Figure 1 (cartoon, rainbow, N blue to C red):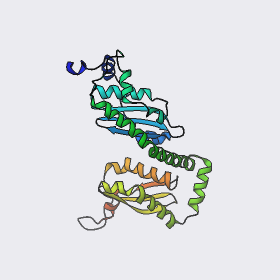
Figure 2: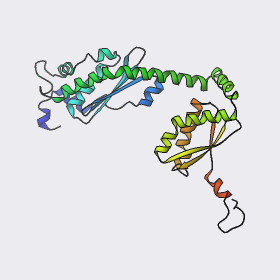
Figure 3: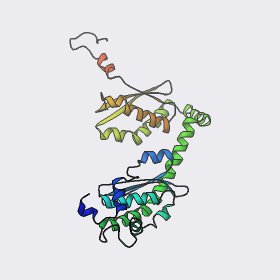
Length: 268
């Protein structure tokens, strides 16, 4: 920080700006895995992340990130500290002005310049938290119910027995249709966005799905790694827990083609 900037800031602000305790980020996948709501709001160069228990509306974890310098850092870090284990309503009654008062070294001397734009921007950010939380709460509850159902159907004896009975009652054609429906819903869009796709070749032994990668996915290393894991995980969680996805070996087709020199197909 320059001397000109620090001369207008309290020592508390400067100390927090040097070593903030709540800088960082919280990702949606973390919230989903824990059955919690994630509110991430941004105003100007400040973004705040709140992980909230939708059952009681209490804030369990907070983080922030900013490129906005010492003022935003001090305001956000203090805000994140103050709202630990309080409800969203209680947190959103806090104002930037009240935070500024806490950051003063001497009660009569302001911690920040009176005309600091960050004061108004911080208040707008707090208002966004209150505005966005109801929708994020509803989404978290839906995701939690979905995750609990997946856990029941894939990790409990009772759930697996139910899944087996439903799966065995389907014909092979119906099973493939069900698989195809989910692939279209959750997988194809991602693959096609990268110039790839996949084709179902067969379902054997009742649970081995033979697929062929197409386009950019054909011959792509990740298609046999992370992409394959994602496809199999999606199908196991949402169609049938015992499905195994077997990608076609690209060499299978090559070995079946006639040799360029004529004669029978080559063998390896």
